[in-house]
Image (cartoon, rainbow, N blue to C red):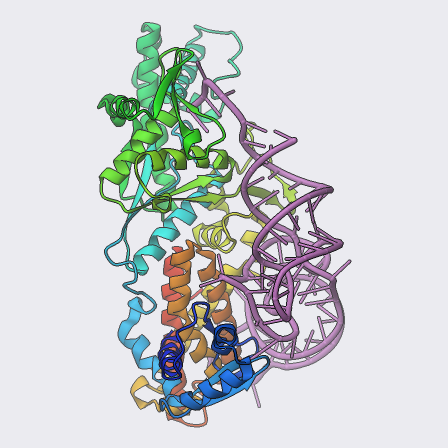
Length: 549
RNA sequence: GCGCAGUUAGCUCAGUUGGAUAGAGCGUUGGCCUCCGGAGCCAAAGGUCGCAGGUUCGAUUCCUGCACUGCGCGCCA
């Protein structure tokens, strides 16, 4: 990051001196082969067209300007079709360590997103049953995206939308009510197919009966209501506990019912009608989403008078913007992708720009046990719920797996593999690197080893040490990219790479057994910086960084 | 039928504004513990980047068509 920033400045200056404008498609990044240098710039290649000279000639002119432009630059070479390969001075690379030491937990953070208020809504599972593993992936992604955006300087609020209104809630109350009647011997007909059949419904019914033995004597409607209120609270408490156990935090829990009861949905519909966005037809109220590119218009109020989810979703999203968020990010299961165009159409009708609304689609999770698929349907498989899975594999392993793949590809989650402490399960590889760093620090302190203040950082010139310094310098850029792309998996992959080089350095370059104490101390500080960076990265994923394993 | 994703090494996957000889781990094969944690390290083998065209100095990347896989297409939630 420091290196990229410096080289960008120098190259922009050189380009300007030569009378050219900064190329829009300029890219500065590490070259394919590290032997070529620290960074490669394609300036000459992209300038070639507008300048009308051949790339290598342009590269030559830029290289002349670059040489001697800064003490930090040790070498500039022209390669291939016209790449500029730049090598920095050892002193420049080594100067990164004091910076990391000073910044500590803030190393890698930025103020890029300053002043931008973002809301991320995720999980938002209907409170009709416990969270399953698919919700877990959405939870991990949403939570991590919040952490990454905050790290990039955004003001972020994490929210859970509670669908506690509508037909499903009535079904929940009815399901519990029927179980209550069964338990008290008042009903023996088969349990209806359109009710929730999970065992947890029976548990809730039994619990409630324990508290209110006369429940079954109530009139049906009152009984269903009582069952609903109790069941909703029970299930939602369970969801909150699961999320807490998973290290997932929400700032706001927003109730759909509160929106409906305050008349906000009706008010939104009135507004849409007044604006001509909504119209009556066939006894129903429709929203002209086709105007904004949707396939067909969508119903807001059905001819029986009841509201669709879409209606309250519009009111809900209107409320989000009214609260001052300039960007709204929804994390949805990929099976809802068909809902995106109409929601986007609605957002545009509300007068918001399309980019103010983003959806992260999280693909399904395929739960496996030793390569064989575990059914996750209503027939309760053994590891149906998130809580079961977490009890089996632990939160760190689960989160890391969820976050190490990009969210829009399907994920195979094999319980047997995730439990293993092997490279099939990268979380241990990364955590082990951190534990190793801490072990070396402990050992050095306990056994009169080198101390940080003895270090001569100029001695860090071995190939492996340089690799580490280069990689550490990339972390802030990786964090920024992850924020920009809403891609937590960038972090996971970076951490794997950093851990890999740390393990290699550890194997060949000792701290305690270094040729002399000043070198050992320098390595100790390098290790410490790696440990700090691993911690910072793991924190963005919500994964712990153990000091011993 | 239409739409959205995906297709990269035996397996699981990275590769985002088009760039140099396409990467990682697992698995396979062969090495490394009198030495800070072997949950580790080193090395080798392994690829028509689904197929076919197009755009250009250059395509895994962009465009078009096709194939296969998954998902979605209700006055459901």
